[in-house]
Amino acid sequence: MPAGLLTAAAWDTLRSAPVLTDAESAQVTAVRAAGVEVTVVSGGATDAVLAAAATHGTAVWLAAPAGDATLARELGLRLARQPGLAELELMYGSWDPPGARLLDAVEVMDRLASPGGDPWKRAQTHRSLAGFLIEECYEAYDAINDDDTDALREELGDVLLQVLLHARLAEELPEGERWNVDDVAGALVDKMVRRNPHVFAGAEAASLAEIEANWERIKQAEKARTSVLDGVALSQPALSLAAKVLDRAGRAGLTVPLPSPDAQPDPESRLGASLLALVAQARQAHLDPEAALRKTTLALPLPSLPPPASSS
Image (cartoon, rainbow, N blue to C red):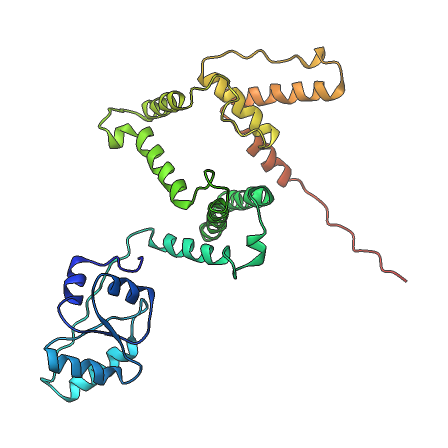
């Protein structure tokens, strides 16, 4: 957790007795900023702790985030050899909630994208990273199709890397245009709360269909869309784009007349109209045309490539 974010019991303990540690750190800085004196011990930590405890009755050792196993072992051995000398108690200053490692990821990305960090990341822009974001999403999609949960965990990490890098680069935008990862997360939280009133606002939703209908109604009110294409990712593959547009029109209760392939003036237009008709058929059958074509393509019995010709 961030430095200084400790439990009330931990703060009470820090203020009740002399506090010692073996190195300066962000945690030490935060504790001092709260008015607690911290003494850095350069050597002989066990003797220093026992001496402070003998003088004041209690002493606190402010451990590193990873813990100070060596000091704990030495203190344990000393107290075992000298019963009654003192009592050793371990206290956790904070408990990491789910998501705490995201703070570490933000900190690492900030260092990588700051002066003295990684020159490649500092040289990127939102536009230069666009292809990487698509590629990482496709790799996560492949892991899902392969039912490979270990690979999915790794690929989602790569997607998260892209999100964090985009957010960090946005901090360098001109004044008035800047945003950061907290703005991204905050907007997401607000959206989830708004669009799930059956969870956060006591609204009634008896079925999944009602939940989906509420979601679409709330989204429509938020976006005030005037076109079926509003909010559709136009850069997605053509089969997915066609299916999305037809689905969006169907949800809005619109009837879309499909072009007749025979009425088209050129081969490309005839092919496009034929493919669109197939997408419409797939939608009626509740099939994903993109997934169907991908599955069939990957199942082709492709022969092996001949070995490269050797040069004489």
